[in-house]
Amino acid sequence: MKSVKAWNLPAYFFHLALFACVIINLEIAEESEPWHQYLGYAAIGIVTLHFLWCLFQGRGRRLLDVFPTPARLKAEALQLIRREPSPYPGCGPFGMLVMLALWAAVLATAISGFLLMQAQFFWASPWLEEVHEMLAESLVPLMVVYMAVSVMMSLWQSTVAMTAKRRRQEDEQAQVPLKY
Ligand code: HEM
Image (tube, rainbow, N blue to C red):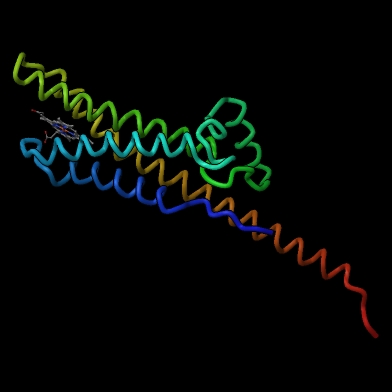
């Protein structure tokens, strides 16, 4: 049976680059430094490229194939409970749901930051500062949830695959005629 890689090089790149931009902006780059803005714009670029990449991936991995509709989420939850193999070679509907939430939060953070920069020249907007900070602070919990879902799904895939392999080997052994 041909094994399918759940992760590929572009997927690693998009995840690492986005997480790096967010963490550096939260923890290292001061909001007064130009780097803060550049990293925010880079985050918008990474989310856009990742979105396009997900739209045009191979069958079964495409955004539309794994888009988290209620029916797909229910089916994936049932497969998880019944310990059935996942039909998705890459990210499934649950992973995509968290990914979409993370993308939306990153875009909203960066766009609110951009508006804040514009607003600083025109009018004082303490509420926009609050919104920008609140959105930025929601990114870490979202990234933690995203990583937890990814790890859980990978463990599920490998456990189910190992069980299926063991069963196949047992079946094959049972079919070999005994030699005397
Ligand atoms: C991933 C994207 C971003 C993250 C995670 C982020 C995070 C943050 C955080 C945590 C603060 C509060 C800092 C503090 O009060 O100590 C902040 C402030 C600020 N950010 Fe961002 N930011 C992002 C994108 C941007 C962008 C794209 C811009 C502008 C183009 C921007 C402009 C600002 C400004 C002007 C402030 C100061 C607000 C104030 O006066 O309190 N940010 N950002």
